[in-house]
Length: 263
Image 1 (cartoon, rainbow, N blue to C red):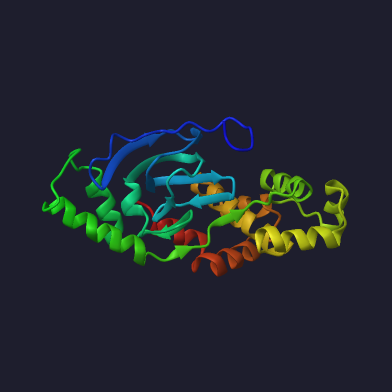
Image 2 (image 1 turned 45 degrees about the vertical axis):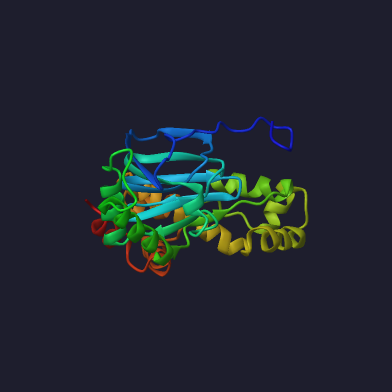
């Protein structure tokens, strides 16, 4: 049992990790969900194709192609696949992971980091400390430390009043209700909800809603839905307004972004 009295998620061990890293190659169909679990090793999860959504108690991380997500050891998480996903995971022994990222993060997978992941998943189970594999692992660690973190995280609050609002908006990010209207659902004043958003998510209500729409849009577009359909479903007045938001967040238009990440 966990300290709060709830059943702990299963601890899924990966080999014995007698070496600093171990790579795993797995493919999943669209809609597949890996239920909540933990590992005694940290992991870098990369999708050659498809989009993954990693969920932890702290929130959701959406991981498009050309991005990777770092999950620390013993962090309970589940993973949902949007589209068919070709997943490549590198598990990192706890001792080595201590000098890398401390929290869940989406990072940009540079060309070098991507090729290192694809090479590591082909390693044999054991290799010597003076081997070429170990030299590649050292470069892999350097690339993780240097990788730019991408703000594709949707923080989730703990307060049950605010959670009623965020859970509903997660299910329907296009909901246009104001914070004053949501206050009746939450059973708390508009002022209280605004304070809770700032304290528990470090975002305003408007910022949180925009982030929820962006992450939902990445999933919609990964499934091949049009920009127009995605924009209207997420509550934007026009496709151009949606494209403007996407460009501000991702640095390019939706069409160019998904053309750039095609394998």
